[in-house]
Image 1 (cartoon, helix red, strand yellow):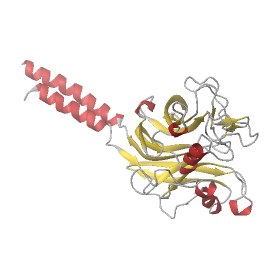
Image 2 (cartoon, one colour):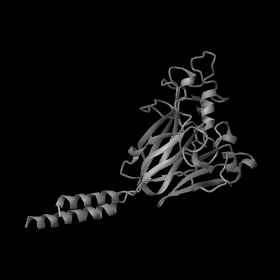
Image 3 (cartoon, rainbow, N blue to C red):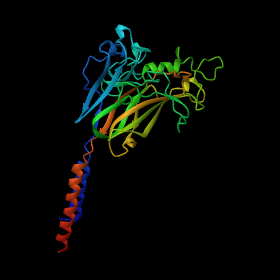
Image 4 (cartoon, rainbow, N blue to C red):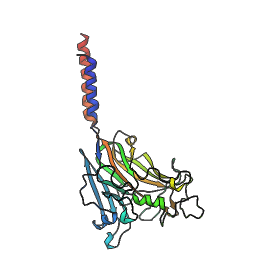
Length: 320
């Protein structure tokens, strides 16, 4: 038997067994009836925390949410944070009654998708979250963590994985607000001197960016992130404000696995739409089809040891 053939076969076996084949969190296993809005979600749940659970292969994941006051039908707290799973096919609508719709009008694939709401001010002081001297976006406003959470708005897994890609898009609420303006954002024409467009604390133009960052396998949030520009003013034209924002975008996030595997993904919105109180654009984003692999280093280590022993044995045998 040719020693090179044997060695190649063993090496291939190690590589194949070292990483499981790709799995996908598509949220299709989340049972209905699903909420059509966060208003419905709050009416259906008691005060406090909850979670949407999903699974793929041997890995479980959770999208947590939290309401900080009375349920909607008992006074409406007006404040919540976290994620929800939706199957809404609508592509229009604004406000809390329609905030779980996406502009493309349904999931990237299948029926279900997730919508994340990211708070833009601290719930105890209402102080806005802000970046200072960010290398990409300067002194922009952003979303941040919510005091009731142990972590930022996130997708958490119970087994460390290697993330590959994720599909993202704008919700219809955000899309309509950015394109047409609303009572908070104002009209969105920065070249119109009569416009009340509130894009006033940044010299990089109008932008709305999703930042995806990593929870490493030790449970620590890292500085490793991937930015996705979901909306940006192009040449000062309102019609150029939205670029590819009415469709699902597949984003490569393989660079987020800083130590080879991760325990979750965190999400933040960065935007120049702001006034003295922080971000004025609604801070929603939809996600779907989170592709990942499950590393299996222990099995690969065993095969690597076998590879070395086989090499020594075969070398001695063929040397005779």
